[in-house]
Length: 324
Image (cartoon, rainbow, N blue to C red; front, side):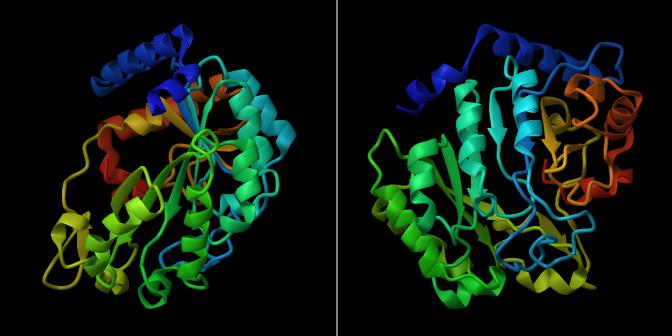
């Protein structure tokens, strides 16, 4: 059923572009950047970087973002969609912030779908129930609902300022939508030391709320004081903790990155950054307000950054938390 619903987003031009991206990626792994960088097949476009929660380890929620707060300009967003619709297969309408805080979210979803681009966004679920009409009318293809605890005690340990019942209410509303109006629903569970004992209960929610997929995701931390949040079960952690309390990624970083080649990330104000780990836009590569994405991806600044990633990725700080 999902394949039938999504086949409308596929075209020969998009398939050909994917082939070009794969060819460029293979050459880049061997240090060859002589050919033109193809357009991305997916993009993350930030509706807003404003959030309604104060989640631990989240720069946006904790008020630690260094860049300004704001909401996407619809005129600039439409321009981006129209310039890239022939090759863009999927648009991810989240980066920092809570997408449902953006009053224009329904419009952004609808405009992308009108231009045959698959749409998805991730939400903390606090505002989901009261925005069910937006979901019904705009019809996003895929929604990721974050639920990182099944009681208020475990949920609010990380999702500070939230209520777990609000998420359950939103899931209930989603489950009541007719099949044609209900998006593919993914439940994302960040695994911490305080909630890992609840994992076995998630299967009951899958059936109760007609959830299509449950994803157990490893948590991201930034400093040694947050090590206690890591689960005991190492299967659910991306880090190894040393005897002196330091942490590091379990697997070493390879000097390559598919996200950088196949995708792009656009901040609400039009700034283009390499990936979702550049939360403060420290590695701004250009701005779609003044340049086309094609020019940005083929600029010296972009190529130099790609070259650095594919030659010595360990030197780039935003890569140090990446699980790819």
